[in-house]
Image 1 (cartoon, one colour):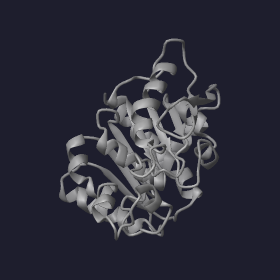
Image 2 (cartoon, rainbow, N blue to C red):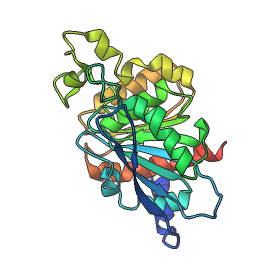
Image 3 (cartoon, rainbow, N blue to C red):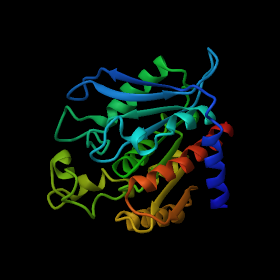
Length: 270
């Protein structure tokens, strides 16, 4: 089945060459961040007045609004063939939280309250939760599930690739203590409240279409396996895949094909 899925994904890319997607870099004003946000938006070719579902792609730590286009250069062809608007903000190493310690790093609120309304007002999107998805890699995988669990009225579909879905085993990494304002030792409850691993009740209540995956040699493999087990125990429907690979752009360039196909199927059920 996985081999067939890969063949279908490659065929989708190959068949898209005749279409003419557009790539825009927009700047979104906000008071929730230190400066306006640059966002890459890919819009499929289509007739005037046509509306599309949207997928928000969140980058990992150290990435920016251009990162996803470098990881998978054929995103435009995929957007054309599948008929979806792809939205790529700059994660700014935020972990997609509203930072308790920095009032100018309120990324969760920016995405939900500023970015999504801006995209729906300025691009041909279908402004419904069921026609909107969010996914990402590494830090962005954590962010995607975190945002969807906390804002199911905004996102009806969610995914994660190699996501840092439990931050607590990595308390000294990726600037998280500075963002949260306290170390894990100083305030364990604060860290608990900012990790996907503790959001099982919210994920169950949210009734999302969920897909996530991780390479078997990834340093986040154990926390993803644990999230999968916890979701099974809570009877939360989801797709979870472990594939050969590690924490690499090669892995994510392949994984995004599966996610976009998964979301396309979910959109078509609406």
